[in-house]
Image 1 (cartoon, rainbow, N blue to C red):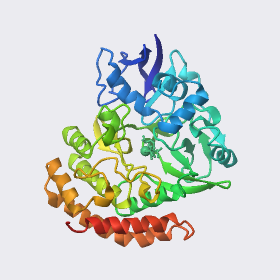
Image 2: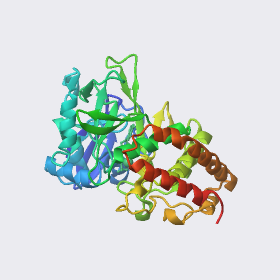
Image 3: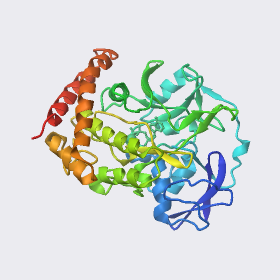
Image 4: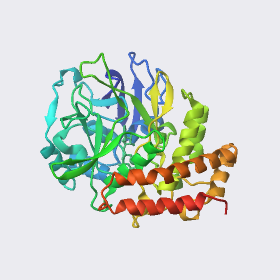
Length: 409
Ligand SMILES: Nc1ncnc2c1ncn2[C@@H]1O[C@H](COP(=O)(O)OP(=O)(O)OP(=O)(O)O)[C@@H](O)[C@H]1O
Ligand SMILES: [Mg+2]
């Protein structure tokens, strides 16, 4: 039986094994902190379902997963083989290495990467999946191309590859041939979220020697005064992991619903539960207003902090509805409706009733948020060149979504 050593916060804490296509995970005697909500500390090995729901969700999805699998000559349906190849730098505080690999022998020297090289990687994304660039062992979820690098110091143009003890600090997404100006779209939506007071990761658009990329600061990495690298990992899990949904992103196919996420927060040990519940509801309203149909269970995460959970800052906020080739249907229905064109205030009221909260709570969120957005839009727009046409499209969409939910129908 082959195995992968699982490291957590830099310490070897267990083994992931595969037998007859079934996964199993077992902690060793050094484990002192649970890796997942669904993997509490215990002596016995975990079954395929519980193991898969955590580990499979660390991997990329769809076309990116297929491209990585092809590149590495393994099957896209084989999470064990994929993690063996790329499961080094992952989301949160987990790392996987082939059994017996001596991690401590890895070079702990910062390995720089020039902006010209980054530009080349971004340009060659069709030939070499970005997660494979420079042969680093990097695995991040999602269907979009991305790479993770360290920027040290944070506000500089000094980029480094994640390797050894040096972990990545930022995620970079390239332009997408099919979805015009998606990098500006995401930066605009993230900027608007921050401007109206939502907690969203820090983002910017940068020019890498002629290739533009969207850059987002990792919220699962923090400065550390003890470690020689000055950086440490913070653990995160997405809602597909915590709800035990190994390969289902969308509610229609059995993925997470608003109610399941809300109930999870309500029933678990969050450091500020009332705040987390309201933040989650605000994120739902915000995603509706910006026209983000892709707010699925993997686009919400929680952070593990001092034995309790916190909702992570928002990420992957994109107005998907401005791209006509994408289905407008929402990843999670609102008040039973998936079609955003048919959603009005009463759908949010029905959602509130279904969650067991008073409709006036959601009405207050809608009213406050719509006025904050209307007041903030001009200033956020000013930060983008008028040549980026997508911004006007998003603004028009936002205005019509606000109109839809401004009163009852
Ligand atoms: N700022 C961040 N800090 C830490 N982790 C992040 C951050 N942004 C994204 N992630 C992690 O990386 C994963 C992929 O990122 P993201 O959702 O932005 O990618 P995507 O490919 O656009 O996703 P999708 O398939 O939903 O379009 C997330 O699910 C999350 O685990
Ligand atoms: Mg995503």
